[in-house]
Image 1 (tube, rainbow, N blue to C red):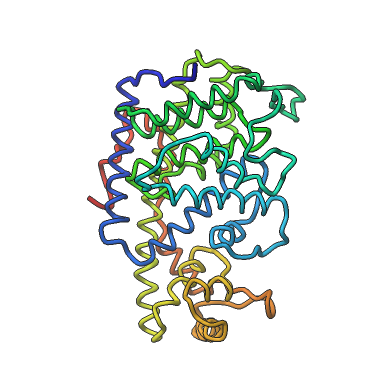
Image 2 (cartoon, one colour; image 1 turned 180 degrees about the horizontal axis):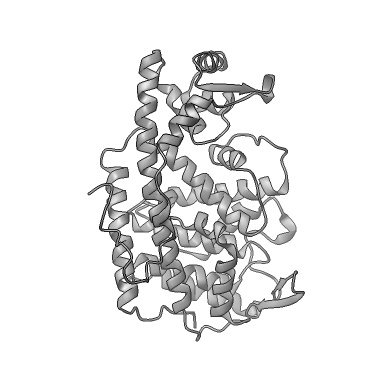
Length: 387
């Protein structure tokens, strides 16, 4: 037996409808006639999801290194275990992107274990790609106590088979609920020696990606979970109550996930508005100075606070190192970028003028903290940026 979704009440059904309204409008905006800078936004969202999911487990890297992970570039800092963990998660998420619209797709234990191997292959003693060989206990080191005990290891293959069968089953259950329950069940089964949280979050994103409304980078709540780690742990503890208890009420978890989806959708809506304003202003600057369109990529990233380098730019733009260097030199000369460092350690950041352009594009973040279950809150059907 697995955890099952509690029957939805009126408030939960309304919040699901609100989330669907936002996602559909954003899906149209991103897919119908997408602006050229949406590709840069998509890459940034992937970097934030990777960084958010790994930060929950204590594998923290800088936002610049998270972008380097997403781009397949080298880190700004040294290659550490934290870096390797984020690269492994990137590899798994890249496979999720491939599977999002695969017409021959099906869930299997091989798929789950392969994704886990991609995540943890840098640490072979943790049995990447294999079910755990023994019982497992989750400890709170600060409190010096065991906070969760997974089901006996002999039960793992059967429980995972049941979870996989449920994911392959045709159902009218909403994808957000299916994703939330997949996450909950895998986290509570705790089938691996390590990396169970990352695998549960990746599986949830895969379920959402198969929904097809938004690309995986945009439908993931991993960034939100990374910013709200303690509430995330707290609700799992409330539902699990210390051990494998599939009879427990899943409603607190479902409501937590619905709130996460609502707020992450509001964040994405703001970022699309800001990306449009910044992108339009950058187009004006590029035309004013007679630059080729390819420089939009580095100016967009720099405007949003990232350090940019010759290596990633020349690969993305498919140009030579010398031509990339000349572009950067000219962008510095006109006052859009500022150079720092020497030779291979050189990178570029936004100038004061470029930073001010970004500052003028900022939107209010007030809506991103709304509780979608509180009556009287503005519903997302109002004030939508696209229809």
